[in-house]
Image (cartoon, rainbow, N blue to C red; front, top):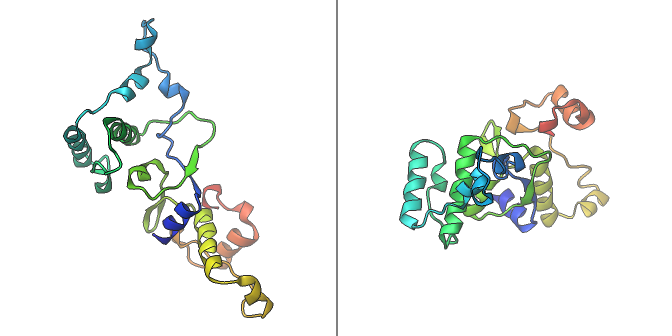
Length: 198
């Protein structure tokens, strides 16, 4: 989409899914009674297990798709996944996402957005009336403004009184009708709105 291309161009940072790095409590779960450092950490050892063949990895992804764990867009070994380490890393992450591994991190992780399909699964998704999206309202507002600023010189338009001001009236992703109440909540008293919708 246009917003995704602009986000990639600007290296705009988006939030990772919590399962991408669930935090130390997940990675440092130890097998009870095991003293050997090499055998201790269960999840780190599981993560290091590689799917050695491309055919085996493709079959594994196909199985995940048939069970409804991943979307059709992830049932591929992509061209830039050149080695078992590359495709295994993505598959292990998709497994954690499918298992809904809870995160114990105190703060959310963010990273520069990339339109590469091998990285699409990393970013958090938010539900909307149009389906899921990787952009929160604040992201869409910022990126849309960046696109418009590349086309129009609003300072000049305002100076010659063609444009007085520019802002969106409501967030249709939440199915809001434009009412006095929704306008006041979004633009006049934003601190009264839900935090995840700002």
